[in-house]
Length: 363
Image (tube, rainbow, N blue to C red; front, top):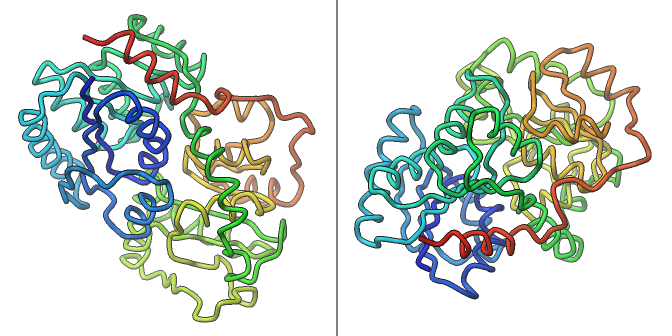
């Protein structure tokens, strides 16, 4: 098979890493990077650390409004697909790169395989929700991480080509965790102690595009009694600057004396995995980090009003707290997850199952 894979954002690089390695043992892959995330710490370092082959095409679209960014991606992806004429277009997750890849392939009648299909927040105000709903409608092969995702598709009348394969991010984490233990010195660089700090990330539009909500989140992080390490997404940093909020990176390597939140630049994957695993608790609006926290055995507070990863909430290891100050502070101070942590989202062999399903469904 000849496959064109579309990626563009940090979570997609993580998901693509195990699938691309497995795919290239048996088939031909052309990797297209839309350039949605283009900062070195959000892109190039991930290709290096995740051992992803260099992109065959780097479309260089960059940031911008949703319509303009998606439209530019659509036009450039179409050119690649007309040149390559693949058997499959492979897309991941719910970004604008996902949507553009799905639209370009569908208009050219090229079969689409969507990895991480069936997720729903049931919040149409989220750009990601629109992207994933459209991508699922256009896909011939829908590879789901859980039974909940399959059920979501069935409710919408999508039952053909739907399969549970597990979560490919578990594959990536299993590969990276051991290497992070030996290669990352991020705790030493930042002067942090094991389980003696919180880790926070904020990047979703529902948080960054609402000034009052974003500043409320920064305010509650400032109230914490222990260090709060805050790798700042470039988009979040721009938004904070527009609001007049200074989020300077501490000059000293040891950040223990810095006020909360302790702003740092985005980290590579190995450093981030090490930082996640050693945190006492994670506060995030990232879907990927909710799962990584669960797999690493770290309690997680989701800074949104809902989550697609409902299984982590049912298991008692994830609490959805939104931007509510009292709920966040109470959870940080008083909440502990149960001792049991059931296995979720597969066995870290999802990538192989994805390839097998593509082979069985090959046009």
